[in-house]
Length: 115
Picture 1 (cartoon, rainbow, N blue to C red):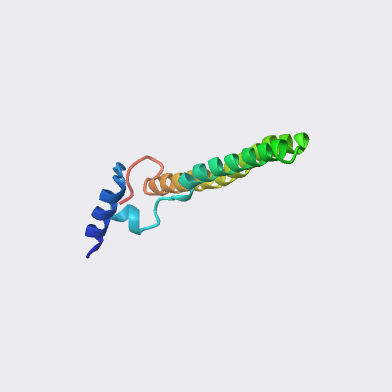
Picture 2: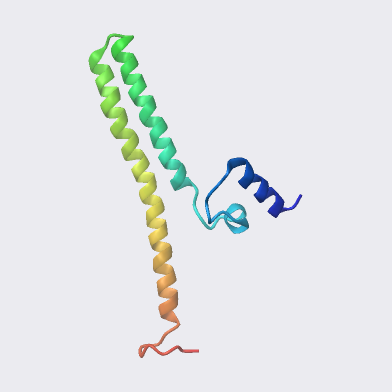
């Protein structure tokens, strides 16, 4: 079974509709997957902090600790996930700047191609 057959079977199993999903996307590290997974991680952390807070309120009977878990956990998970996303956006912006400066280096001051 070659890479194309594996990729086609993966597409069939998960019924992916991503147009960008090809061999280059799957088997090389040109595009980051982690920023997409951060959204899922945020929702998991948000759910966990809210359920922990509600558990403290209703089962342990400690109202204020539950409120702190709900508010503090929600804010902390949001801030932590945003910080990770910021790092990836900085990386994307630096790559864009690098591409633009590479294009500009090919031109002299008059805008005529040096080649």
